[in-house]
Image: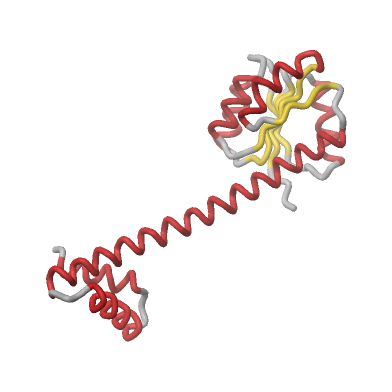
Length: 191
């Protein structure tokens, strides 16, 4: 599985080094680090990431606002690492938005599973986006074909069935798509 890019936000050099070592040991090789919310936002604007990992607090804020910003504006998963004493408050604030909350000290197995789940979710999201785009193209094609049928009905007094068969036959005879036939009809009659 392609692990994708992980953006790691942490103000602690020690946490950064430990997390980079852990991520590398688990096969997450493509990691970019940032210290502040501003830096994370710049990275997100320039790169497509699978996971935004926020070691709270970060340099310019607690990290809660950044986590919510990321989950509401980008398709990557978000994992918030928080102090154990703050875990319950962050769980209540962040988990309803789909943000994983993990407390320190980090349980490595749980941490790895959260990261892998985010990567898998990103892949599923990308597949759904691809399917959505295909459906949007198909819907647009059907709209054009329906407009062409309506044009044939209005201009040439064909029935809907005749208009449908006419477009199908032209597409077969000319070895072009029904959309191309429909566009030609629209160009002829709508100008």
